[in-house]
Amino acid sequence: MNEITSCFLPPEDGQRRELHNEVHARPTARVRLPALIVYVALLNDGVTREQEWAHLRKLPGHADLELASLQGNFLRLRCDHFTVKWERHTEFTRYSIVQPLPDHAHWGAELPELANAVATGTEWLRGLPGQTMAAIHLGMLHADALKPDLITTAQAWLGEGAVLASRMGNTAEGTSHSCILTHFRIGDDGFERMLVVAPEGTSEARSGRISQRLLELETYRLMALRGLPTAKNLSAMLSAAEAQLAELTGLLERKGESDEALLELLVSLAASIERATAEHGFRFSATRAYDTLVSQRLAELRERPISGTQTLGEFMQRRLSPAMATVQATEKRLASLAERISRTSALLRTRVDIATEAQNQVLLEKLTRGQELQLRLQVTVEGLSMAAISYYVVSLLLYGFKGLKASGVPIQPEMAVALMLPLVLWFVWRSRQKIHKKLHQSDV
Image (cartoon, rainbow, N blue to C red; front, side, top):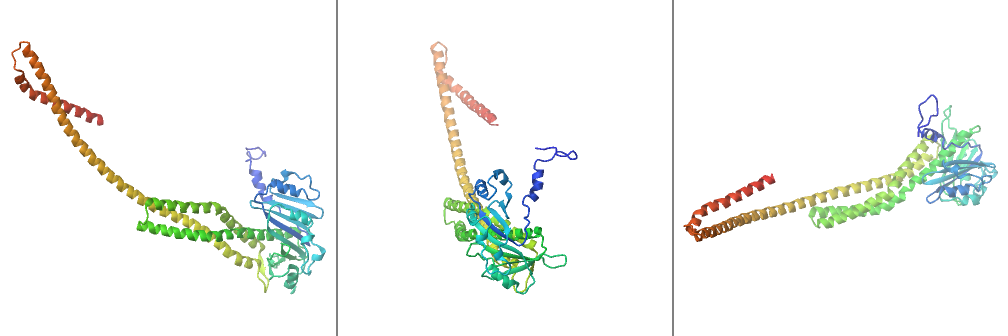
């Protein structure tokens, strides 16, 4: 419905404001360093918005939270000394708890305990509705990223595993403004660990953007990889289907089976492929979309390498690219198989059509021969009928002439009938010709 919202403009489309404000729907958090961000992304299949709303109401000071607040799929709740951000997406819901970094987790600490330090309490975190897909402890603090012992110190903070590190962004002086370090490993507490080292004076807005890109990067990476098990599971089925199609094509070429049997096998094979496409098409499309988002987030980090370590982008693309190639190849293989089945079905239909035409031609020839015989029979019957009609007419005339003779008329009935016979024959033949003429005229 159009509404008049300005005296300077024509009536406004009803969706204009909603579409315009979409760019502001998920504002970036402002993070004050040093900070700890406890991030959890959960698959929300079967989880209702009401369940998530009921759980958010358990946060201190938010018992009166209204369900309408969750309709925008984004909500930031401020609690004492921490904030909770809730975001609902198509397949997953993510929660970000931004809180001050615990004192025992300072720069240089050795594998600090973080799971028990969550500001919401471990019970609230454990009770989140859904299934965990990503869980990250992101530490953000001030430190000198140019120190030679950067990797060693970060190794102690992150725990066991080869450290991946890169400098991020470019300042006006051409230098990086921060450094990200991680090992992409899940610890005993179920969380991954990431560490961002930023210089003094880093703005809260920049810290918020860095955290959002890193957390989204890891979430989208994991969501993109959900297509890999599907592709692997389909591999055996596709190999069997391809072998079956090759066998059916060979039978079609050699005419080793009846058309009905081949058609039944092809229909069964096509149905199985269409079912696989319907069941997994969304997963493959989502994988492509998530992979694109991963590439975008990596580009936004503007990574610069640190000597002796791999960047996040190098590590991720080296592991992610083969998986995405496998998914894309499986998707193309599925589409190609469906197309080949369609072509084989078209060939079979062509063969069936040709056989049907041949059968119709034979049938038509039989019908034509039958019509010719029927025409001959009809001509014969008409000839006999002319003789019969003539006989009846002559018999009637004979009776008539005999009646005249009995009444005293001097006439010889047999002689009179003999004289009338040519005329009777001509009259019967003429009547038959008139009937045929009328029938031909009615057909035209």
